[in-house]
Amino acid sequence: MTTTEGTVLVGVENWPAAAASVSWAVEQAYRDGRDVDLIHVVSVSSLDTPPGFRAGAASGLEQAHGTIVLSSAGRYAERCLDELSRAWEFAGRRRPAVTAAQRVGSVATALVDASGCASLLVLGSRGQGPLGSWTLGSVRRSVVKDARCPVVALCPGAGGVGRGVLVGIDGTSDSIPALEFAFDHAAQRSLPVTVLYCYQARGPQSPEDDRRLVAECVAGLRERHPDLHPQMRITAGSLARELAEQAQTMHMAVVGGSSGGVARHLLDHAHSVVTVVPAVARRADAVCL
Image 1 (cartoon, rainbow, N blue to C red):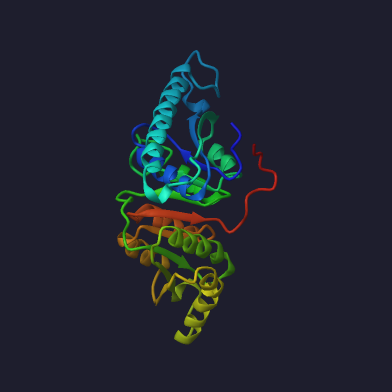
Image 2 (cartoon, one colour):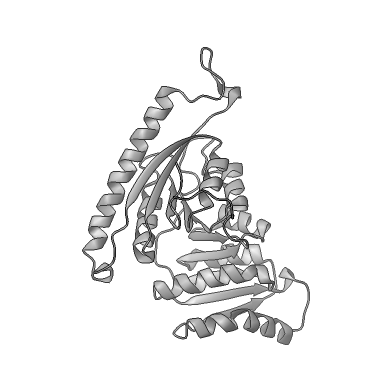
């Protein structure tokens, strides 16, 4: 499978556990004017190879299961598109195409490779799969750390409109892609946006220095989105803990990928849609259609 340039990519592990992530991704793709790629990865480990099977090869049963999962997800995506196409806000918009493909190998590697051409990578909620699920633990953390596009994770309790979009920043240039994503998403969905900065993110400064720093970070985005009136929250404490706590009442929480510990804490504790935005662009050598 080669990922279409700019597609919304959805990691589909099991069905119907992935229904929420497919639904969210399809709606976002419709809003963005992009297509949808569904990907299922059959994880292969030579340590788990049963007698009589070639090490590093997936069994026919595993691949058949993947085909069923993708078929179910694809039909559901088309039903979601049918429903969205009848909504007034999508009138006149191009209907996204939905494709599906299966890969065999390392789950994290396959998803990271595919993210090289995608505009978004959408993953499901933690805790929905079986023990060893690739939406849990080290696999999801590895994907979030190395992905070359924003990774959207639907954490438990996500899906409500909430009170808007919350973005956490550390005051460095690495926060700019996260700010841009948060402002664009808030403007697209007519949601308020809140910018959160914590003293400990960069060390002690005077309150005036903090306010000036945050104002400089959002200055250009105010011009790009004049209808947005961002709320600034400058507080002492841990950015990771403050984000996770304040995210409970938000539609989405956004953080930069360079804030590794903050992103991991948010993924483990938030109950909202969480987006981790990398500070680097897509790979120059990514293979796209």
